[in-house]
Amino acid sequence: MMADPNEAERHARHARTVAAEHGVGDVVVQALEGEPADELLEAADTFDADLIVVGSVGLTGSSRFLLGSVASSVLHHAPCDVLVVHSHTARPAAAQ
Image 1 (spheres, rainbow, N blue to C red):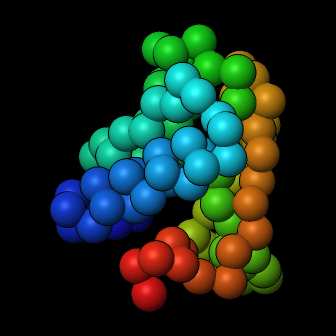
Image 2: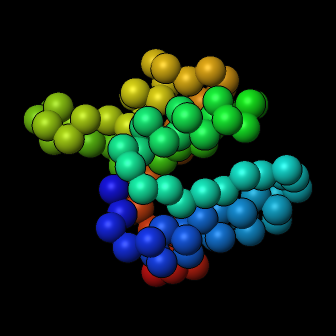
């Protein structure tokens, strides 16, 4: 979870830009406080989402067990399709 709301907003703006560059319209991007999986699922219900895109840094073993998995929770409880994007880093390329 990101503690800095400004950083979260930068990531959200970057996601909107990338989506627009690839011809995706009607994108809702939000940076909210709370448990990530719960917030994603609530937003999907609120906006009657067709798709949730969630990142995964590929935690395995005890790290995944101890920290939980946002992607896994969203996959199991989402009211719509879910696209899990594997990433080696949590930062957008433009922010590095």
